[in-house]
Structure formats: C-alpha cells, structure tokens
Length: 109
Image (cartoon, rainbow, N blue to C red; front, side, top):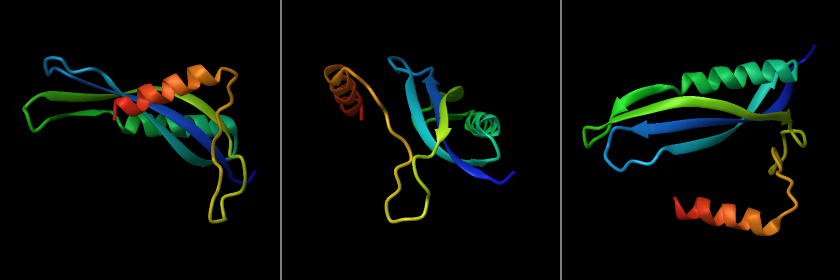
C-alpha cells in the first residue's frame, strides 16, 4: 500500500496558574502521509501528544499545553503540487452561526 495524504485537525489546550488566564485552544490543521485513515489518525494523535508540555512564562506563571483530541481526519481535497492546494473545507447550513463563530475567533486574536 502506498502513502496517501490526509488532513487532520488536532486540538491542543493551554492553561495557566496566572490569575484571570482563560484556557486557550489551538486548532491545528496537518497534512499527514499515511497508508490508511487509521494510520493518519494515529500519527495525528502522536503529533498532538508531542505538543504537550509545560514552561514558565516571562511573567513567572506556569503554562501547560495538553493534547485534547483529533477532531477530524479526511482525505485531502486535491493533489498537493500546484501553487494553491485546497486541503480542508467546512460545510454548514447556518451562515449566521458560522459568521458569529468567525467573529468570535477574530476578536480573541
């Protein structure tokens, strides 16, 4: 069996003992080469776990990063090789809810 490209979405959380710190979530989209979707998910889990750890911020507070989940694994939408490659797409019915979600995301950055 030959390697195939998959898209995996991995969720990581960052917490801190800093007063008022809100948990921060990182949704990372990966291109994973694997022989099957199961292998791609396994590799995505390994990636997520490799992101785990802790460090002290410049302010002296502990930051802890934890793997939360592999949210999704799918085939890439098209071959990787051109100047532009679509790797992931979201489908939804409620445009207002989507726009509210996007607005909320952009207000947090």
